[in-house]
Image 1 (cartoon, rainbow, N blue to C red):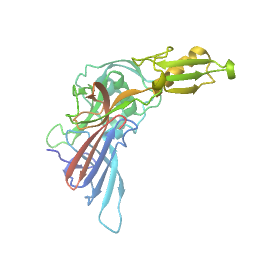
Image 2 (image 1 turned 180 degrees about the vertical axis):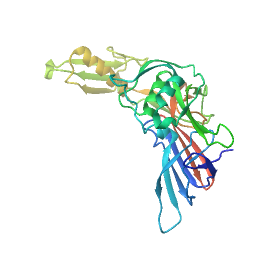
Image 3 (image 1 turned 60 degrees about the vertical axis):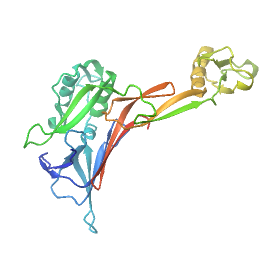
Image 4 (image 1 turned 30 degrees about the horizontal axis):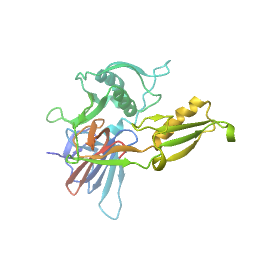
Length: 321
């Protein structure tokens, strides 16, 4: 059974939290990676957590009023704390480069961060990092997430008590990411949007350098199988034409390259989009969708937990949603 528990500043448990709460965790740029508590809150609390999950964190913000007893507290989630430090290159080196088993690599990186606050699982992940170069001055969250994505893996964070009477330990771990579902359709708990857009362009007139009659011109056409060529397939009533002005093209071949990219964007196409996932997966896991002969896969990038009046609601958000 899910429980939201108050923590003291030293991480020892105080007791159950019955305040309204809002947690937002996710990948860089998709979530705020913080949480808010609102209600009549006791003094002396330092944080909260849901055992066995990554919903939790330490409180670093307080707002109150002399007109009522309602208090608003806020803090970074465990994932959000990983955004509060930067991976630095070693002295005399341009970049931080690492190799080895993923959890061992992370243990080395995090050993000096926040006084060793984060515990790294000693379990072998089966993921071997080979000369991974971190972006310059990236945060720990950005760096670790990016490194693991390169190896089709995910960063899993949980907080739990290792033994009775102790406070929770926040553990980070590298795991291979998984694909949830093998063939979703309208009958499964994933919202899908199928679009058959037949209003696209099938003839692109590409204009390059020069002027008037001497201007470089290439005509590109969509073929029956969806490829792009120089022979016209759609004619008469079916032809849809557009001009692409690329006067700064360096050569005809350069004009063709960029013209093909433009036509791929503008041509008719069938697409399938995942809107939301009512699935139990980790951030970084993939959700598979299938409808009308088209399949698509998108990662879970964000997870939200809201508790209002004792009612719990969880949401998973997919990339682009």
